[in-house]
Image (cartoon, rainbow, N blue to C red; front, side, top):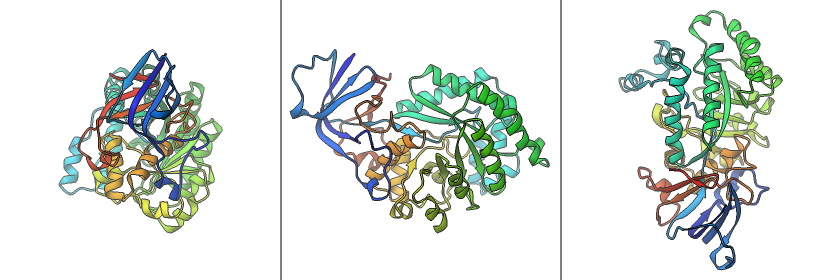
Length: 413
């Protein structure tokens, strides 16, 4: 099946196949072609260029005229927790009334609240809730997503979550990467037995996950009150032995050495980064570890934003992701993430789009197939409504400017 898209006002994020991420000053460059065409063959991008160079003898089975509209690759959301049960809207009101994230957690709220709800729900109930969230984010332009476990905190609960993620991956055309986050919090029953829970992760959860091929990555919440650097390293080492690459929650509230631990074990990404020291930034230079910022979490919790300008000025890359979860970022809208990065983190539209596409793909190890308009990559496309420039995408932060989403060459309805 050959599809020809013509009269594209501007085709964004046009890259050579050798470019898998952009860093530092390169993040401010967004290659585009104005008045462009794009050819899709089956599920892949086959060709593109200027309309004046379009051959007349293509004979496509389908031709789409998008005059006045722009096309960019779908968003790559490299950090989400969209598989969960219920919600935590009452904690939202608690925060309005003055309670902190830590205070809510100490009262049995936070992650442990979601753990209770998940373990009381059946696998089918969790799947039914989660697929609605997945369908929503696809319509909002997300074409690849990472989904974490971490609300089970028991062998049965974690496996249940990962099976749901696997079912979603099988049932939907969007690319999904699964992350095992058994070390999300310490379960109540292990409050006085930290070693016992870590042993459970390593000796019981990981072998089952590896045996059933339920995850690509392993994650740990390395933070004061959650898991120490030493515990993080022990869990990461075990995950690597079972074939899982690390992605780590670090520096959300404190800088305790989690970034350095991630680098030590060649983590694919270090995520959150709301609190960054000069040493943290220096440590990330010249590494293959992608820093991932989660601005809608900062927005929702009223905590600091990742210092993007400092990091980009130091030559680092940045990816953007939603952190979609029921407690600290109940939204999977990558368009809002891009806008918030521009408004609150002072990233330029070019930097934010790069961070949400090609760098997000790198943070999921799919940059060879996603994240840019490149011959041979998946035909995962956002077709905008008629807009004056791509600056309008973050500028009109409350408007849905997406006309059509294509995943693997097919229009999503």
